[in-house]
Image 1 (cartoon, rainbow, N blue to C red):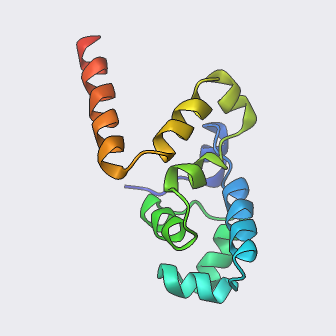
Image 2 (image 1 turned 45 degrees about the horizontal axis):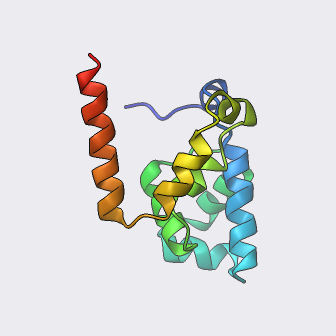
Length: 123
């Protein structure tokens, strides 16, 4: 499967640069160097630099590892990359995100399965 391009993700309403800026702010707020975060998340230092600058689209598994090291939910981290126009199309998105971020993983999974079941009924 081909990796998405920066332009493609922008066209889809996601801005990798915004995620990178958020990662940098969170990292600095926790007193971590770029090298420390890269090492603890299992990412090459140059790769972490590219992520923070928004010049690459990181894999979801990479974002998950970074989010774990920054003590933030991966969904919250990803949401930093949503353009405001994308968020405004779904005004309830932020509320759902807040609800999910306060739930334990088992409840998130249950919620996800419930949404899939509702979608399946609408077919």
